[in-house]
Each structure stands twice: as structure tokens, then as C-alpha cells.
Image 1: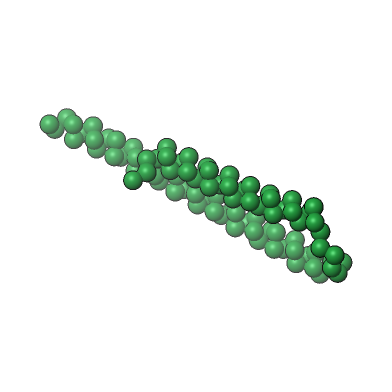
Image 2: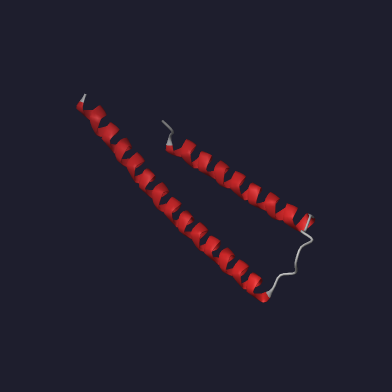
Length: 90
């Protein structure tokens, strides 16, 4: 079972790896552009909408992760307090 600090560190590492992968994919796109059609205004607008949707999803995921981290911290605190009370009973 992971401790809260181990869980936080693992999540930071996963976020870092995901960001690194996205940056590598973006860099490869810019370094080796495709030699296809030129983008139309509709294509650019569709891409902008897609990027906005992804940013909204990332914001939602980040907000949810903050809520999860807060709830885990509350649970850890409750467990700590319960252990203190259990030690007093003995």
C-alpha cells in the first residue's frame, strides 16, 4: 500500500513523463513537418477547437486530481488521529 508521500511522488513522476512525451511529440512535429496540403481556415478552426477541448479536459483532470489529493490527505489525517486514540486505549 502506498503512503501519501509515495503516491504524490509517483503522480508527479507520471505527470512529468506525460508532459515529456507530449513535448517530444510536439518537437518531432515541428522538426519534421509533413509535406501535405496546406491547412484551410476550417482545418485551423477545427484544430483550435480540438486544442481547446483538450485544454478543458486537462483542467478538469487537474481539478479532479487536486480533489483526490485533498481527500487522501483527509483520510491520512483521520488514520493518524485514529492511531493516536488507539494507542491511548492500550
